[in-house]
Amino acid sequence: MAVLTDYHVHTEISRDSSAPYFDMVMAEYDAGVRHLCVTDHCDTVDWKTMGFWEPCRDVARREREMYEKYIDRLPKDLELRMGMELAEVHFHPELLPELTAPDWLDFILGSFHITKEYGDFHEMDYRDPAFRAELWDIYLTGLDTVASYDYFDVMAHIGYWRRYAWQQGYDEALTLAKHGDRVERLLRTLIHNGRGIEINCSGLRDGCGPFPSPEILRLYRALGGEIITVGSDAHRPADAAKCVDVGLDILRDCGFRYITVFTKRRPDFIPID
Figure 1 (cartoon, rainbow, N blue to C red):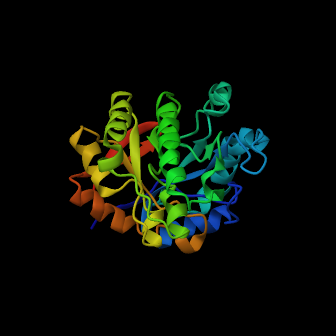
Figure 2 (cartoon, rainbow, N blue to C red):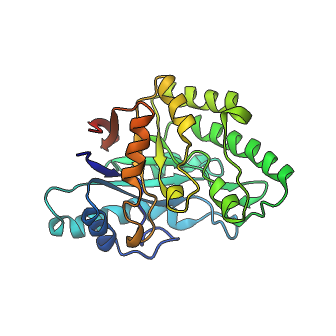
C-alpha cells in the first residue's frame, strides 16, 4: 500500500484559512497521511491592497509555536514537518534572507499568486480570450522569476490559475502545444538548480485536474526531474488529503517511482509502492 504524504496544507496561520492547526493535522492523519508538512502562507503582498503584508514576518515563528504546542499530543507514527508557502518574492526579494533564515524550517514551497499588472489571479475576470493568452505570458514570466531565486525547495502548483478560469466556465489549460518551449525551459531551470515541483491535487476536487497536468509531469520526468511532492492544498479539515491518492496514481502513470519528503530542507525519497 502506498504511503500517503501531504506537503501542501494550510491552517489558521494562513490568512485564507480558519482551520485550527491541531484539527487540520489530525484530519490529515485520520485520512491516512503519515508524512505531513504544514505550509502556511507567507505572502509578502496583501492581495487586497497590493501593499506589504507585515504578518509574513511571523509565519515561521508561529509554525514553530504550533508545532511545539501540539507535537506531544500527536500520534507517534506521524512524521510532521514545519514549512511554509513563500509567495510574491518578486515584489520584495530583499526580505528573502530574513524570511528563510529560521533553521527549524523543513520545507519551503515557492509560489506566485499576484501579478503587478492585474493583481490576484483569484480576483480576475477571465471572459476575454486575449486577456487569458496575455495572462499565460505574465504567469510564465513570473515563474521564471521565482525559479531564478534559491530560497525554495519545490515550485508550487504550476498552471494553477486554470482553476479560477474553470470556475468561471473557461477551460484554459497550460499545455505543451501552446507553451511547450517556455514550460521546458522552466523545468530545466528547476532541475539544474536542484529544485523540484509538486503535483497539487486541489484541482482534482472540482474536476479541473492536477497542477501541473500529466503531460507536464511526464516532461519533467523525461528531463530527469526527480524531486516531486504531493499536496492537497487543503485549507479546511474537510479537504484534508483529498485526492492525494489519485495524485499518487497519476505520478505512477507518469513514470515516477518515488515521492519526496524533506527534513531541514534536505530531500528524502519514499517509494510510491
